[in-house]
Image (tube, rainbow, N blue to C red; front, side, top):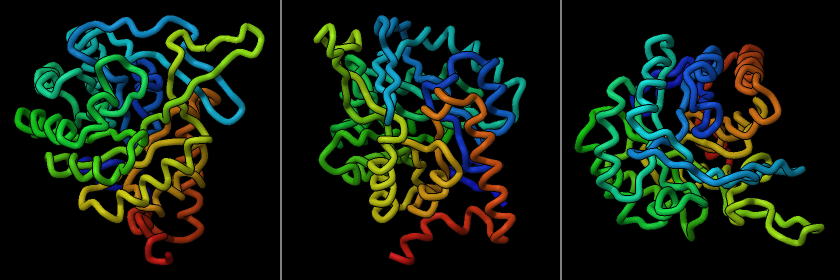
Length: 298
């Protein structure tokens, strides 16, 4: 009932772990993989990257605001950690990559020959010289995808930013570059101010917003991309229940990624999968037949 195929990957269910959430250690990935259709690692670059000092993550009533800064141990060290996961789990592993230039993406692929797919982080809104710096430029997005497609036969997913005038233009650039799917979306630019100290709370001042408040924005992006692109769309942003996941699927998502919900429950994906299973048991449908179904009724 829940099986889907996305960008050539066969998933036992459409619920994936989003990048940056419990994706830095093979032990935590193994726990999530027990229920997830696929897991996405924390983003990794060629060199070690410190990231920003605390406070870097803030919990607010409607959202989470963060500026972690793409902290990473570097590709060589991280490849050992992820290889350990790949040896112990059959759940597809998507390795998330970040770079400051298109050619750096190509050099990263060799470190992860065991990856099921690669996700290009073209959308982090607070990392210096990476992420959204590339992802707001159509030509750079197309080039980033092209250079890694030239060196690997693994599926390539482009994770898009909502912080653009028209996300469809960026999605189309990724598709033209050879992307096998797009992920929509990463966080929206945000910040927080402390009223007592009267200064910004995040050490980096500027960050990104995820969580429930992002859902409507992400859902709209998925809807628009599904209407215009030929490649699959993976929905991400504010998904914390099976009903949220189903909304994204009906809007056109072939799969969904869950991130901030883990801030509140380590069993977030398990709950979503069980809820979808029960829904399909009652309706007698298959999840793949519901992808984009809301467009037929619009």
